[in-house]
Length: 285
Ligand SMILES: [Zn+2]
Image (cartoon, rainbow, N blue to C red; front, side, top):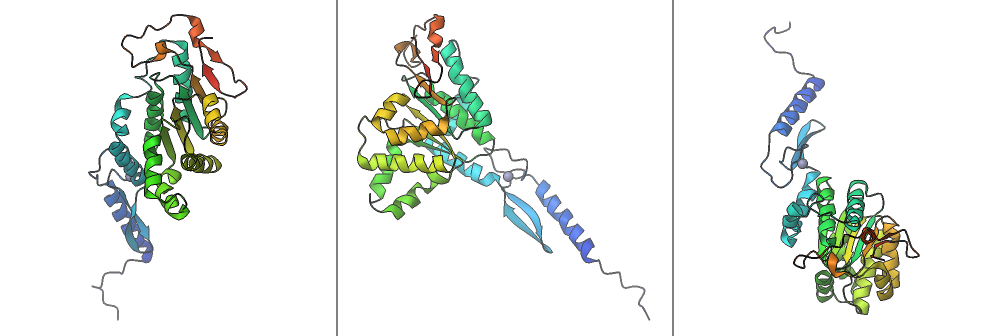
């Protein structure tokens, strides 16, 4: 005879629904992580999901982004991202508008893997590249920042030039990031063979894998081609005609000089359509 007081056992489906509800409840609880507002995990860094009949916690996709913010803070770029934005880039001249619009287009579409800007010191190259990084970070990409000379020196001092395995592991953060910004790239006129080798490794690999690479340099593309044709042509290939930009030497375009006398001449726009080097160049000519 059946005991009328025994409650009915919940079915597997009921249990699953209850666990599902529990996961949902736990996922709704807000966390305390800062720097990046994640709507998925509510800033806990964890997501609760059902695995069979168990609730398990998984790392949220925002964690690599948080890690790249941590690195950015360490490098000092994160602080600059708050001030060096597209909005704060001063546009009073056509050449500035060209640079601004291309940088913004790249940040929004990244329809090519590379963005290069070279030339005149103090014309806002770092400002625009930093603005791109800020935008990519907000889109959830892992962004890494490297001051080229410092980075290459560190790689070469910590790894034997011939020890490829060690170098490989040191270079992994740069190789695997969704986007990297190489600041002040190949500044020297005559980089050593070891420095060229690291530079080629980085550029070639990121180009082959189609990973976003932002490069700023005091050298325009033509000068970079003269320094090292193999490296420069890979960069140009990554950028295409739209995102290979140069600012011809001109003191008036140096933001850092006190009260630069900016030219009012429309010729200052100086955008040359893709030339034999396939790059956009701002000149006064
Ligand atoms: Zn998250």
